[in-house]
Amino acid sequence: MPAANKKKILNDPVYGFITIPSELLFDLVEHPYFQRLRRIKQLGLSEYVYPGALHTRFHHALGAMHLMGQATHTLRSKGHYLTDEECEAAQIAILLHDIGHGPFSHVLECCLLEDVHHERISLLLMHELNQQFDGQLSMAIEMFEGTYERPFFHQLISSQLDMDRMDYLNRDGYYTGVAEGAIGAERIIKMLDLVDDQLVVEAKGTLSVENFLNARRLMYWQVYLHKTSICCESMLIQILRRARFLLRQGETVFASDAFMLFLRESVSLDAFLSSRMYINAFTQLDDYDVWACIKQWALHNDTVLATLCQMLLDRRLFKIVLSTEPFAGELLRELETQLRRTGLADEDLSYFLVEGQATNAAYLPTQDRIAIKLKTGHVIDIADASDLSNIQVLTNIVRRYYVCWAKELKTTSKSISQ
Image (cartoon, rainbow, N blue to C red; front, side, top):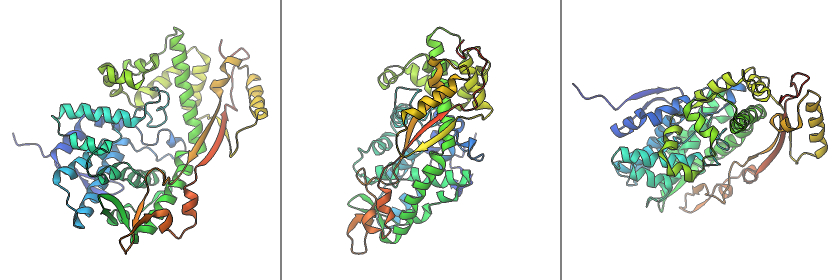
């Protein structure tokens, strides 16, 4: 039989035709670990705000791989020596950078595992794949970790101007219809250069970088931290919290075997590393596991769980108030009183009244700076290169406090927990 054609061309709605350039990259895309990303939405529950936000981590990873190919091509065209192996490794690293995401992307990162960041799981799965592919991912892993001898590769993968951010801003703006997400990634990539193996942007690209930072700030408030998204995410987190509570009280709660493992146990990174059982279960999990449970739990005899699930299914969402200052105790007590009037027991208040805070910082030069190369050859920070006064403002961390609650809660006259 003829060998399969592994150099595929895909039609991407954001960039047009993109290519999977090597057999190894094709085999990684075909692997079940990566195919799972088809079943994990990029923006969690943002579709409750923007109906078009149905794209997946699979879309995003392929787009980031495409941009990485453009970036390495640009650097080569400017006379920098990059081997074919390095270019392929960089594309592998960015292709797999989100492979450790669980259901609903960032939404459940705080509660499905014990505050284990998805990048730690991505690295763990990359090591697992490296064994399966006989060590062919070793260079990509070094680039992902930042231990490779040429640091600009890690900057292309994970920095304040990386291929990850360039793709998700463009892609999320496209699918949500929020025009402010458009950043001109192609222009920025064409302006990339190297100085002492560090990534820089030519001075001609300063305006494009300014637009990138402004777009990131706007997308956070308009999409990623949209108040309705915060309500949806808060409800989902409380649903899982209640299901876990019931399980640990000995109640029967429906879930797939893989999902049940993480509901019953508090799984730390050490536990994850110590047993293949957790790796096998995690790589079976996706959004569909959670939605199937929510539909089933809406019929559960526990009124708290059933009410939360049915509210989310019907889009009867919590109400929300935002503030630049922490909320006074008087407001919270008033909201608690309102909820009690519906028949809600005191021990159940926390499921229907949630406090929190959201932060947004478009640019943090103390972490890793965006460097601009002047015509003189000198390298300076974008905040110093820009003539826009708001670039300095973008370095400030903006904090919003929120409280959301079930304003339209409808229960029987009995305690909701009975």
